[in-house]
Amino acid sequence: MIKPLGEYVLLEKAPSEKKVGALVLATEKKEGNRGTVVAIGEGRYNEKENIIVPIKNLKVGDQVIYRDYSGTDYEEDEKKYLLIKAEDILAVIE
Image (cartoon, rainbow, N blue to C red):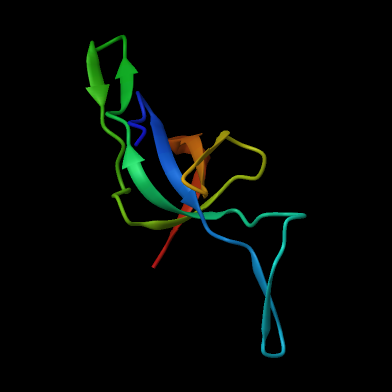
């Protein structure tokens, strides 16, 4: 598994599915911007105070919404992941 560095977060992308009656279709055209937090980096380095500021308000397992067109895609064992900066995560789904 990947361990994010710095202010990065690893998300497992939520599958895009569309229900049509009793059928469930997986769409490949546009993936949703939802995911599950799999791993969190140690935080952002603050040069002025010479400390690492941890990423707050996120924990492994959180369902999140992230900004479109951000991060780096990664695929392992047929699962799709996104390595993204914490600041590009817009909301936690409760």
